[in-house]
Length: 490
Image 1 (cartoon, helix red, strand yellow):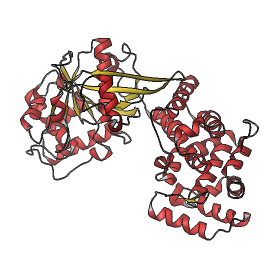
Image 2: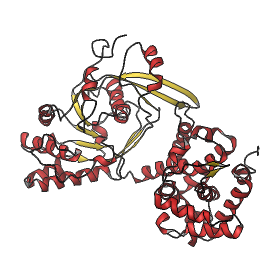
Image 3: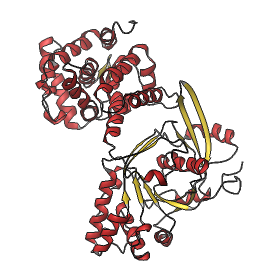
Image 4: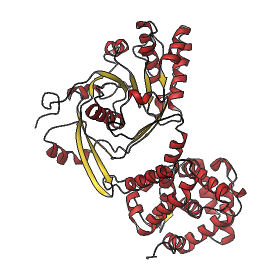
């Protein structure tokens, strides 16, 4: 069977306009896929040259396929299973700067380069004080970037038109601002001339981003059937879901350079991305975290099982519609569309998303993903959000570490596990004992950043829910919570 490359596959070639740090699955199925769509549908004419950020990487293997690879998009669209695939043609080549530094250095002198994209993991945007300008290359991604920018500044004599639009996709808050701060920190460390710092400010646009697409990656177990379907060998097949969203916090003129509208891509250029980040964190991540202890104690194991189940699925739908969305400050139609897309993504039959995977560090996740909704709801509605309060009780029950006699393999900070284990050890499941346990948990400022007992009625309601879960079981307790909105079934 032939290997996928530009000899066996008649791919288009494009002008190298995009420099990408990172050759992993996410960028290839997310940003490179989007660039391919804009090339195909809007004549973007953008080729992507990929730099591997670490000494060990896949640049050379990617070059064996001339940058070509196949993206499968699998999920639910408009209520129906959808599965499509296409060859992505925008990647021109890969560079390993640890082996071919001269190729990396030469990128600084290519006048057509305009965009820089990165995904070097959350740990990638960090300052390394041992990096020096003379290194070939620097160890950190910001160090490599600063060196490249400086060489470009010197080569083009500070010409403003040769600056970049820089889109980091690492999952940290204000990623563009943080990357720019570290670049300027290197400029100071290396004693670069003040004119370079001015050029960084004036000629380069560092944008913070929010990225959203589930990318399971290389489907190793399915490759024999996929290879037979494709009719060629592809070492870089990558699977993702159909849903995608890229929010760019930057100047409006970026829309004139990036033809995403013509390609019908879900890209937004905004002056403040905070509402979109809040929307994602509270609806998608918040629903994940809130459903996990409930669905798992109910006897379910995956997100898809949870949302397809008549009782737990109704809980998740009501949680989003009745308690999360009312606290968010975005147009109602946008929130409803996003929520509908989230439910479709949860139902994705091609992605097996285990609840126990989501349960990692559930206490801190509830604090960041669900607690803001709970407190906002109380402040706005002047009452307790019943579903979130029940979820909080289920979370405490989950940390008892038992599911119908089966030990739960809890995964959290050791101090958190020890503290909750000790509280449960001293609890005899009586109403008064459970009240003492709940009071201790809600009052633990190290968990929540506040004493949650200060919210009127919260301690009592969490205790009541926890009592029902412990004495009736999750199945009956949740059915009683949801009645009469759903028909109970045992």
